[in-house]
Length: 291
Image 1 (cartoon, rainbow, N blue to C red):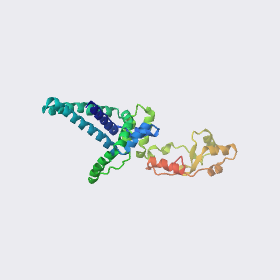
Image 2 (image 1 turned 120 degrees about the vertical axis):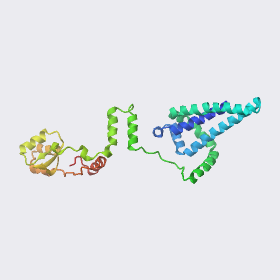
Image 3 (image 1 turned 90 degrees about the vertical axis):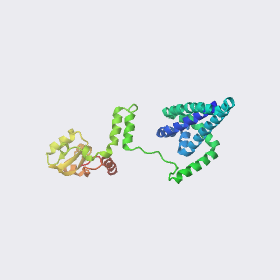
Image 4 (image 1 turned 180 degrees about the vertical axis):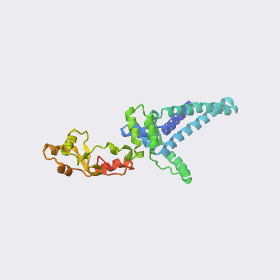
């Protein structure tokens, strides 16, 4: 009876651990080559078979323990033994075979899953025909109710769920990196208008200015790319890569005409463009600055 209660404890621990384990963490360990995690991940690929072997073993051990306990109690107490066995075994199975082990498994699922993977895998091989028969009836019942028991991929996180994960992982992620990840999750909500430099703050080259002033701006400016225009910004001529202008200057070939020739075509975008979409468009167009 003690052995059967311990066996019931094992299956109860395994059941709760496998249903509580972080599957993303388990798959990460499996991808790193952890053999125990690989076997556990394979077991979780078919939850109907996994639950079949666990519940088969748990039910068998509970019923057999109750039957043996009842026979012993009847031998010593007669007809009253049924009541005695029921009361005692209910308490023992409930505490030592269900509540305590399942609470432990819910608190520490990962190590329990890794250590029970091999025994469950062996047991599944040994009793597979019986598990298959049980699953045949249970899956047929689910199918009649319109429920498919086929393999379901890991459910993806929504943006808000990912935000919660990042917030709760603060002990593993530096605050600056955590803030960066949270801002990445907000890209879908941000438009190009929200981050663009306001018109009055744009630094550019006015071709109508004196050539000496333009040269001074090229050699002392802090930007690698500058919009080039005539008189006012709406008359944009193109985008200048300052390095190209300085190369011509070093060869003494830089003037207004040669400056215009090396301008890149300006890239225009609607101000309401989704920022994430615009980043992809920048990559596709090989552009780095937009107006």
